[in-house]
Each structure stands twice: as C-alpha cells, then as structure tokens.
Amino acid sequence: MLDKLEALKIFCTAAETLKFRETATRLGIAPQLVTRGVAELEKQLGEMLFIRNTRQMALTPFGQRFWPKAEALLADSESLFAEGKSDHSRDLSGNVRITLPPLFENQDILRRLLRNLEDYPQLTIEWLPTDAHLNIIDDQIDIGIRIGTVPDNRFIVKTIRPVGVNIVAAPDLIVRHGLPVTLQDLRHNYPLSALKNSNSGRLWPWQFADGSSFFPVQPSFVAADIASELSAALAGRTYSQLPDIKVRPYVQRGELVNVLPEFNFQPWQLYLFRPHQPLIPARIRLVFDLLAQILKDLFPQEKIP
Image 1: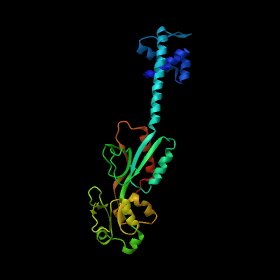
Image 2: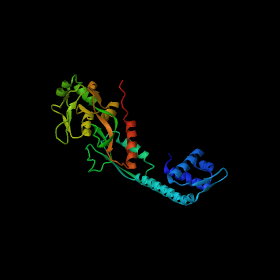
Image 3: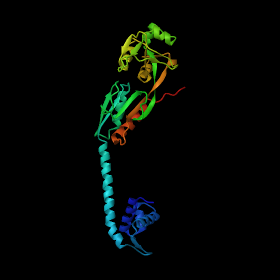
Image 4: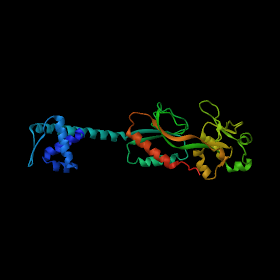
C-alpha cells in the first residue's frame, strides 16, 4: 500500500497532466504505480477522482474540489519538512563540551577533530582535559573520553581499545639499579612511585597479569596524578607502573624501558561516552562519531603475535 502523501502527489500530478503515462514520467515511477496510487486513493475516499476512457481522462466534480485541498496539504507537508531541515541545521550550531584525560596525543586528537568540523563554523567545541572525573550533570558534559572500567547503561559507550599497565623505568636508572628478577624483588629492592587515590587518600595498588598485586612498601615518589608519576619515571627517579597508552611514545623512543613485560596487565578500556538521552542533538552525534573514528585511528588495537 502506498503512503498517503505519495498517493496525493500522484493524484495532483495526474490532475495536472490528465495522462497517467506522463504522470509516471514526471515522477520517475512505473505507469502501473500511478494507476494503483489513484485507485487506492479513490478507495480510501469512497469517491471517483477521474473519468477515464480509451481516448481521454477528466476530473470528476469531486476530483475538481479535492485537487486544491490536496495541493494545499502537500505544500504544508513540504513546509513542515523544510522547517525540520532548518531545525537540523540549527542543531549543528552551539556548544559541545568534551572532557578527556591528558593523553600524549591530545593535540593530535583536537587538531583532527577541528579539521573535520571546518564545514560547521557555528559549532563551538569546549575542550576540557583533566585527570579528574567531572560530574556529567553538574558540569554539563556532552561527551567524555576516559580510561577505566566501562560505565553502566546510563551512558552510550563506544569502546576503543583495551588499556593496560606497564612497569617502566628510565635507562639510566636501570644502569644504576639493574633489572628486578621477581615482583617481590621489585617491591622491596627498587625505588618505586605510588599514585594516591584523590577520593580516599590511599595509594592505588600495583596489579599484574598473574592476578597478584601489591602496594609499594616505601615509595620514593608519591603523586596525585599520573602525569607527575610519569615525570618521576622520565627523570630517572622511580620504577613506575603506568598506563601503556601513556608510556607508549616514550618506550618507542627509548626514553623508558618496559621492565618485567611478562607482568603487563590490561584491566581497563579506552572508551568514548555520552549521556543516555532519548533525543540526542545532531551536533553531539556528529562530534561523537568523529571522535570515535579519530580515536580508533590513533589508538589501534595491538595485534597479539
């Protein structure tokens, strides 16, 4: 069965041409569809719209009265959908607030995003890199990038790749202290850094692939943020357990060495999220989809040999 608006469009075109074949040509449809559309409309109305014979076709008196009403209804529908398109355009203007951790690749993420938004000059990006987890409601966050445990179904989540923790140290520190043989050797005989939980004030434990964990006995450096702990490792002060996504560029350049790699552990995810809303503005959906692709390009999942 044809849509009522489609049937009305067929009728109005046929009323103008008074030829079903020309109507089909104008609308780019099969002639049989024109015949069927008019027949369905006549059945719904309970009235004949055309008088047809082998030589000519004319509107019935009812068809003549119905034609201008149908034209007006089609015009109103076009205006309604045009208004919807206008609203959609306006929806691609305004602010999008994005929170994310201070990743090494942040500038590259932002540069790629803004380049992809060149066609949307009315869209404003608020870029909020921070180690703190901002309150989504109070801080009016539209999109977030996080490393951690994937949240519950209050959010729409796009996972990017697993994130692990590596034990790393600067080459000059390894020259001075050597390489640990076991985890207990590392814990008791090497200068370690520790990360403080800003909520509880306690230290986070080091976790390992074999399921074990420990707290640094007498840490040589304690930080409340990962960036400072990374600085301590780069300065040759400590052996540190840090997110692999943070240390990757430094390991690739030889500024840090992955110590005891057999204990590398992947407990978290790098993920993109937005609040679960029944109607998501087009500007947020656009930026969310762009960020998902950018993050997948910058952080591809590592292939297991």
